[in-house]
Length: 593
Image (cartoon, rainbow, N blue to C red; front, side):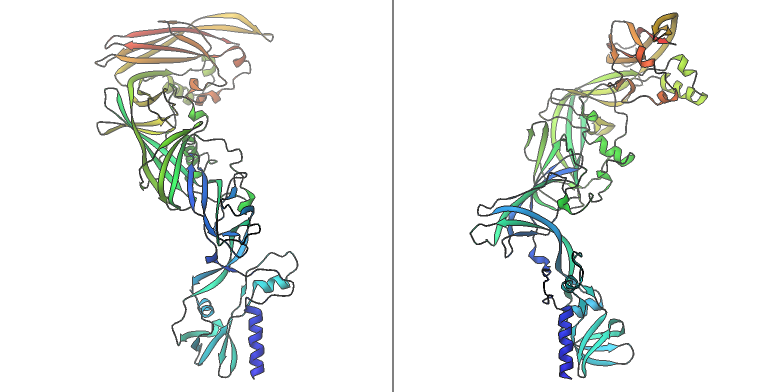
């Protein structure tokens, strides 16, 4: 009987004991998770497009070979992962990332895990039915990772232990193998352990250290830095005007962290985004093919709501041009907001980028934070603008249906003067692209989009439609000259037109008004004298408020149109006295076949 029990115990040790190795097997034991440590984050530089430059550094424990083992594996952009050794006595020779078996202590949540955590314990076993007896828990057989490595074909991927469904119990009659499904109840004679070790795969990072002829130290100071998507900041302005030419500007940041836990970290918020040529390509060191799925605030490919949000605040080239007279046409969407953050430290300029520094910031992964960045005073003045886009020639309108004709009438027959404030950036900070809330006397007046404005430049923020201005516009054809132009064997008529814009200021004080009129064709004259320009239709988007108007696609424009016609712009800057009508005149022409 004893020899039978001995054989069974030896069999148990063979199939379940972690110390057994097949001949020729080189597989390592699963290391306890506690042997791996996380390299602390010291500094993060956050860009508005959702990328962050992360810098880790700290003293880390070494293993018996003097190497540093980390349980944190980043997902860097290719070409931006750079580890280093800050230890004078050791040189970093390489970094290995891989799937490693680790032993993780977890609370037992089922009978199998509880029995496994209490091997060697004495208990009273009650099986389904009436069978009840005392026993010592010997073990739960499984196919270990070492056994898999010894019996599988070469180059087979490493496997975790395969759990069985049998428990071996030492009873007065011998060793009993019982299926777990037959055990109804287990009564431990002593307090049982409620946690046990389970093997699982983890993505781990090993920093290979060369200590030369010296004995490896118990710890080594190492670091790494990389660029990774997962953290962004969304700026927002509050502009409080006093009605006398002074604006108090406050810059606020909403910080979104989906990267890693930050604990007492120096965080830099950057105005402007450098070029990341391979930002959508993950470095192979990450052991995965694509970036982790992030929330809607990090999506840029979606052309809908979320993509528009990312584009609006992402410092794209077009949105970061110097402030211009045209309005932003989209409605900016706010980001999520969190708790108020710490005070802001010093800020400084780094080449083409401007950086605000937040020292000693703590923010858990998945959390949001709203905090004030800076406040300053800027001068402003009230201005009024009237923007009149070009309309299609009558010959084109004849091809539109009734609904399109009504849409055209709504677009061009009711021009409105817009009330704006023009800020002069006399602060030491550039203004970045961000939503701007305009407030006066504690009341919100409007919300617009602040565009990138360098120090010394000007930017316009729209307040509302100026209803105290009366606008009348009329245009008429003066004459047509047949066969006025020959082009590629075709004959074109010259159509000449005159226009008039009537303005009346019904306010009690004088107002500065900027009137801009675009026409399809070439401007000939203006009265009073104004600035006449021929717009670069290939690059200048002002004539169509950032894009071609919606009706442009209603008509199949002939290929010759842009060859012989252009887009003209006339701009008046006038001071409009109260109750004194002013008439602005202009003439232009275009060619038509």
